[in-house]
Image 1: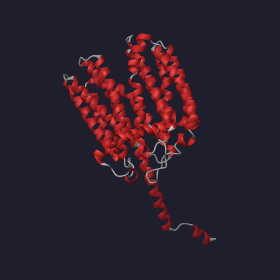
Image 2: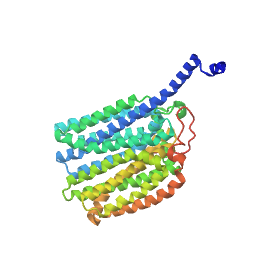
Image 3: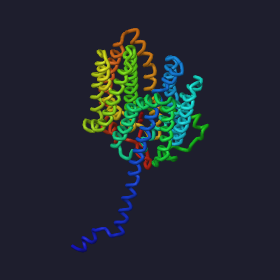
Image 4: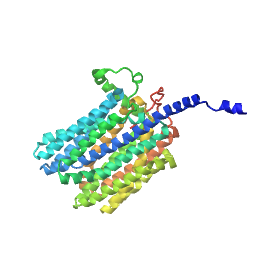
Length: 455
């Protein structure tokens, strides 16, 4: 017995080997968790800076004597920039330049924001310079977002971590959405350049955060083939953008994602501008702030609860149920006549949307080959941006020409149709494998067997 036990126990050397092997196995996992936290931090800081400066740039134009129409034209131009640029930038990102693009775009955006801060301090800067700097920042921001879409899949070690990591990204977005506008307003009251200096700092932190991520965020060279160089990449852009479109069109999962995000983006934007127009017509600046605060707090709550909800009910049931429930707050807006009802209805919308976002983000990442993450994501993001681009003008027309309840009635009908489509489409596409990430592309150490595509 003694000899058997002695033989079964590891010797000091074997324990050392096993310990070193276990330690070596733990290191990549620990590094992955650290890098995920870094990604959460950089995303939250970047979003906070964007919300801080974005909310006050129209105010800066108005304070400098420009008309609301000028601010509106700039907003539309910035939105359309993302629609066209995103898919183009995604091509070099997927071809092995992701980290470089993310860092360079953050640095250039910081420079543009610093220029805006100087222009705001001077007080008499021409409109051309202001708009040029603001659009340059938007171009860099869109470039960063397009490249960053493909980074997430490289940092997630296990498929079942996708909902948790996606929820962390969503939580950072909601924190920025709640705190950013308030911070921007306070800083703008103290001194006009301060919001833009804050965004400059946020972009600098973002660049350093991306640089500090140790996990490779690009496909190994052997998987993506030889780099064609700058000219070769530019020549390949039209074909690769078309391949991204085809990828989304072929995948049942991505068709569901692009349909849902496009309709929802248009609905939420239309309703948001309706609230601004209806409450603003009666001098409701404080009331508008109440609605924004309620919706932001509800969105943060939804983000914090989303992973538990998805794990408790399953991805498909959570998606379908939350989409049907969206009808209730949307329909309530048809009868809204004051800030409290508007605030409660928007809170109901915003507490549900993060649950759906976590499901769709995880499913889309799982359904997209690693080497085309940015291209597929850019196509979906551009579709959503395009759907939202015409919402401000649409809201203004409906409120003034048809009536203040018309946008909510139209959106309620759209959500009913969306819920029916989601119910039918999710049954055939969101299996446990695709919804929870079990069919996610393999990590960079193994061959990818995916045939389908993410946002």
